[in-house]
Amino acid sequence: MTRAIENDGSRSTSKRRVGRPRASGVNSNVGAAEDILQAAGRLFAERGFVGTSTTQIAAAAGLRQSAIFHWFPTKEAILETLFARGWDRSLKFFKDIRASDLSGAVKLCICLNYDAKFVAGAEPHIQVMIVPRELRQPRFRKLLRKRQRLIAHLEEFIRQGISEGDFRKLDPAAAAMMILAIDEVALDAARPQVTRSPQKHATAVVDFVLHALVSDWAKIHQIQRLMAADTIATRGFRVSSTF
Image 1 (spheres, helix red, strand yellow):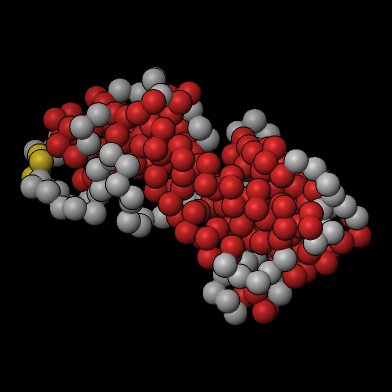
Image 2 (cartoon, rainbow, N blue to C red):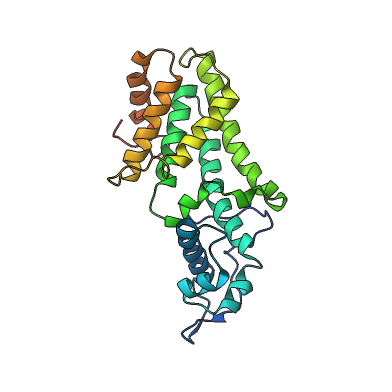
């Protein structure tokens, strides 16, 4: 998930700074910022943003508390960096798919499959992407515009799908917001008793959304088949072969 982070007021972890001492007394700056992010992400997911202190983050990262502020000026900056990472990656992927000549329904499925697997995937702090109340503060307005751009891409794909006759007539803006909410909240509110793999989670989300949007359910298998077709894979998109 590591990639360049846009300048949203958060500190980029790509810039090396002078090392700060570990709690163990060992001086090292190798991966210190990343250790902070990983530890904070796990704690935010377990205890919530308000319920997590910088002291707890430092202890989980094996650092002294002063080292936290050497890399991030506030706890809010850590949260902002985590969200920017996740949304930047999805936005890049959505933008690439948007530029293709695929149908709107297939674009939507590819992006939703990618994002659902990503959110359910290997890195624990990704699940922090379910938007907490803290991100509604004015200082995070620029960051939340990233989420709005994700919704705008989904809305565009839905509009295209409606015009092509694959999707039933509905409000594309409202549908896009509901789809992203399903993707995010299904990990928590609808978590099954038996843990599903990221791909099974993505499959369930895409299947649910298709049954909600498609005008004729007989088209669903065709859309899923096109999504997994070899011609799509050759574009460099990582699409699961389970469809």
